[in-house]
Length: 75
Image (spheres, rainbow, N blue to C red):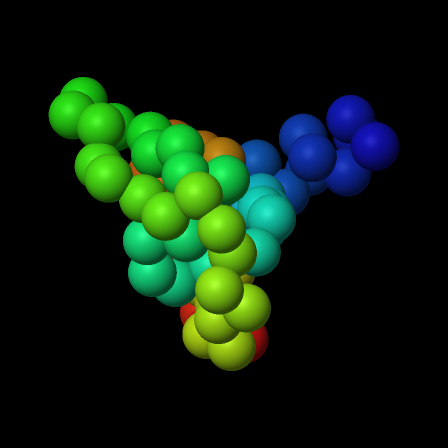
């Protein structure tokens, strides 16, 4: 695999990227069992209200420059 990456990095016509997605997140105040991430805690319900809307976070990293691109898709 290392040889393939080196060849791609050396080719000026090639861009090497890394793509990843994370766990689905419920939209609304019900996610993570009432817990929230952030500098200030956000009040959240302690029960999952079976919301139908969910977000799937993901990201693309351009390996050569280290530039990230974050995205969210609705499921």
